[in-house]
Image 1 (tube, rainbow, N blue to C red):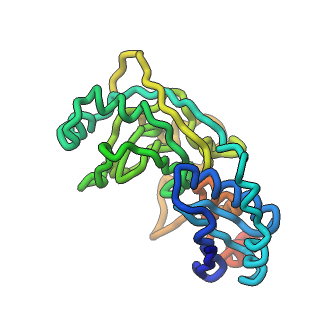
Image 2: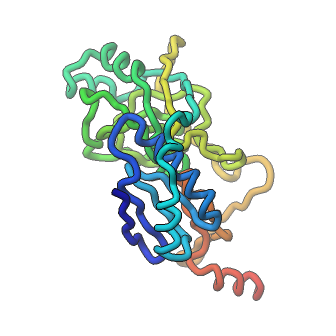
Length: 270
C-alpha cells in the first residue's frame, strides 16, 4: 500500500510502491520516470525502497499523481543500462577481509566478481552509487576508523553494498581494488553520473599485474586553464555559486548559498 510521509518543508517520501525483490530498484526507477512526467516541476529521487519527491505543490497533487501510476507499466520494462567495469582486485583490505570472512582471497574475488549488482540509489557523494546484490558472505560493517583519503575509482564494500568512490575523499568502506578506465562522475558530462538508479553492473577482473596506488588530484596552482586560487582568507570564508538544482537523482545536492536572495543582493552590490 502506497504511503506518503512528509520529509522536510517541501518534500515527501513515497513508500510501498514496489515490494522487496531482486528487481525493486529498476521498478522504482520506472515509477520515478512516470512521476517526473506527471510532476515536471518536482524532483523525484530513487531511494532505498522508496521515492523522494521535492517540489510538488501539495500532498493532494502528489497523491493524485501516484494514484495514476499504472503498475502494469512495470512489466516488460527494461532493467536499466548494463555496465561492465574492469577491476584490479589489489586493494589493501583483501587480507583483512579474507581473515574476517574465512574465505581465501581468490575465493573472495571470485564471489564478488561473479555477481550482478543493481544500483539501488545514489548518495553520500555526487555519483556514488549504492550497488545491491552483495553475497551475504561478504557483508561486513564499515571500518572502525575511516581513512582520511580514498583514491578516486576505488572499489569498496560495506554492509550489504558495493560502491565506487567517484573522487578522492574520506571513506570508511573496505577496499577491494580499483576500477580501470571508469569515470564514475564527470561534472562536464551529461549526465554527470555514469551510474543511475535501476542500472545493472558486472565487474570484470583485470588480468594485468598492478599495485594499488593512492592517486591524488593536482594542486589548484598546477591545474591548466581558468581557475580560482585562494591563497589567504580572513576568518571563515566560502565561495558559493547559484547551486545546481535538479541533480538530486545523481547524488548531487543543490548546494550553493544558503540564502539565494542574499547571494543575488551581494553580487549586485559588488
